[in-house]
Length: 261
Image (cartoon, rainbow, N blue to C red):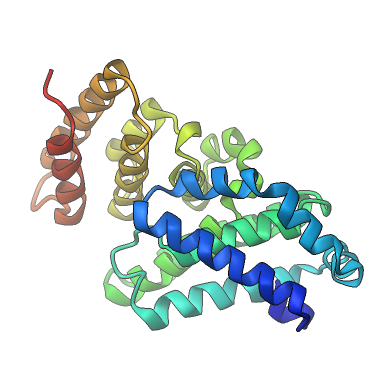
């Protein structure tokens, strides 16, 4: 939360440059989990950089919920202004924000992050009820997803709680966690989203499967994923009326990228 905290030191400028470089590298390989692998590799160096600014760490420890909300708004605004959020894919900026929040709040604990995530879940549920279907609602809900992703890696230990929720917003938060941390993805649970959720959620479930495909490193895992994709695509195409074309395109692309045998 650098802007909220108002630190203009050279140390923090170098820290920001390092995070930006990491995000750019990850953007080049389009593999979200790699961002956090890189962050963990350089975890010691990043922590040393922050430790050079004790006052900053103290402020971070005392960071208020509004301060966290402002940081999430900054990321969502930047994504909207650049148009990078139109297709809902994870971007380097979102990866950078998630890494920055994970590092800066490491010593704070998870409660402030969970409170903010719960607020976002309620916001999604409210948007779905109050706005008519259309581009305006989709943009507003995508903005919520962008914020959820920024928190997701820091609260991944609570994934099961959000998966089992009766709130669609909480289940969207679980999907966002799986998008950002695909090693934690539950394929059976994601598959069920396509038969039980609204199109916005199962489109994002498809994006989560896309990131799972990026880490399938054995023939067995690829075969299992292919089976899930075939089942989910059949489910989407079985709906009355025109199936959600964006979801169909994601699933078709994934199937074509996996070996048939």
